[in-house]
Length: 430
Image 1 (cartoon, rainbow, N blue to C red):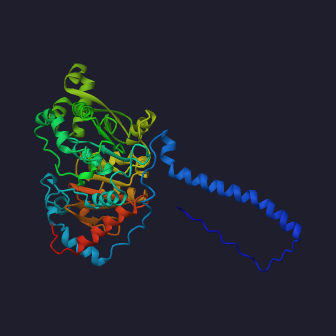
Image 2 (cartoon, rainbow, N blue to C red):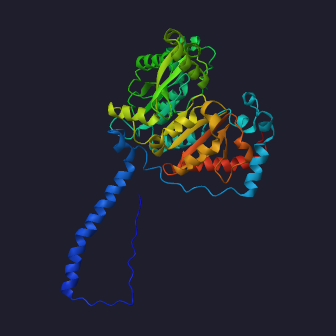
Image 3 (cartoon, helix red, strand yellow):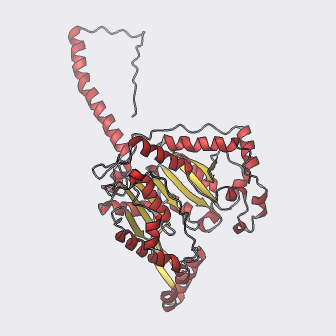
């Protein structure tokens, strides 16, 4: 809640004598103005809290906001802290691999290989213990919402449903049984981590319906499999699948069929190859290439809102895994980011990252209220401008975790505390 204090001051050099009648008339005149002012302040507050929803139609209600609150921007890194970070995330191997970043020997690559998001999971564990596993239900508009851009095999999306709802029916084993044929077909794509968000025995209730996940992917084979799996498991109301590529502009993106069928990483060179092929031979293009709609994340979620789906209020988790198009996706998601509590994306040397540096994204996100960290293996290193080190400019793979300090002070506190503890751990060095 925002409290506005107005202090009235008197100018001693000006003396005005009023009769009792004049003072009464002034008071009567001021009353409607005060009432109108309070109404306008209330409308302004509603406008801010519902900004995203009002732009996109019905949308979802902003959830879990009353317990979140605003966190201050962390204090600037001291020279001592920067020195500790430099000792833990050494620059040597980063400069070795500048011409061959796929070796992935850089310190911040090694440090973030295992993205466990302990600071986020501990928040939801505490939240469920505080409120009880049945604290949210179908009668509540307070829904947990997660968005995944690039879904891999869907395991992380399933675990997000489990984490947000505290409902044990969402589990990776059940999901694996439904998509086992697809797993076999995509044998070169290893399974995601099969560990699950911890729940107690009382959490396996079919009455929970308080979480929703959006899975956006360009592979129609994967999305068809996900839809079937969600339907067979009775999760269709909670696991929403959107076909398409995500970028910062509306248009078409082209994929080589062979790379899609093999679930290989998409390179923008493939897009360029298909465009050239389309100009030279329509037959060759249709034989070898696929046309996939590409649009900003803001547009996709706006369309979900117009369908009447729960799609554009508070977003509790946004995770991007896009083969190097993360920066483009972030640039096309400004409205989405304004209502997102927690964000994870990947930094690397591919595709759109060839044209940008990580600090470009960090500064843009800071302007939106986010504080970003390298995060993995239970450790975190803040990477705002005050903590920035020169070798972070080298393009190498890294997992980046960002928390919106304007929307969730608890996760912001957890991440900053993890950063402080990481610096104090003398055994950490990469």
